[in-house]
Image (cartoon, rainbow, N blue to C red; front, side, top):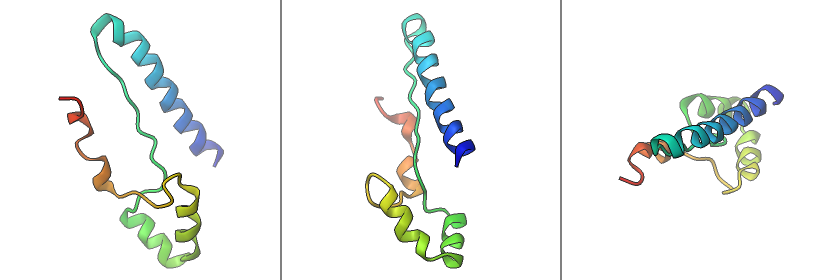
Length: 80
């Protein structure tokens, strides 16, 4: 988990740095997404092998459920 969590923290900090650099100078807004577990084919296959993880992973998410890939589509259109 350390490598995974560190990479998420790095993406978050990169977004903050880019927002600070590009925001005032170029008027560019920078956002990052840090979703938890997403119901992909790979995760569904994993749940077949380890069904107990479905409930555990859902409880670990702030929304109490796993997200779907469709929830992350068209984020570039936000604010248009």
